[in-house]
Image (cartoon, rainbow, N blue to C red):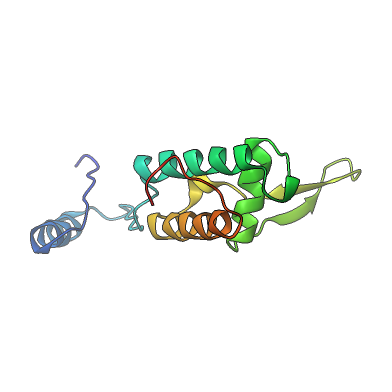
Amino acid sequence: MNGQTLILGGDRSRQIAHQLVDKAPFGAVLNIQEEKRSNDQNAKWHAMISDIARAKPDGRVYDVPTWKALLMSDAGFQPIFQPSLDGRSVIPIGFKSSRLKKSEFSDLIEATFAYGARHGVVWSVGE
């Protein structure tokens, strides 16, 4: 049996999932996970980051990658710091927006909007 992907969006897809599990060979692998962020969410957030960078809240002049890290931290997505292999610095680990689930990314967008609203950012995208 070839691998199959299902989106559990209703009763029919759940029935199919049950049938696939019942027919699965010994040792088959099942991976059920929440949906990842959408392309629309990603595009909206990146536009919001650019809006914030242009607004320079509190006189902060940062590039987009720096704003991404700051906004993720502000939203509660904290990195873990590990020492580098040579021991001369520390490296942030697990700090990628691409790994967020759709619901987590929604929270990130809301936190970014709240930050921008507190700082008078004019949005180029709809709320």
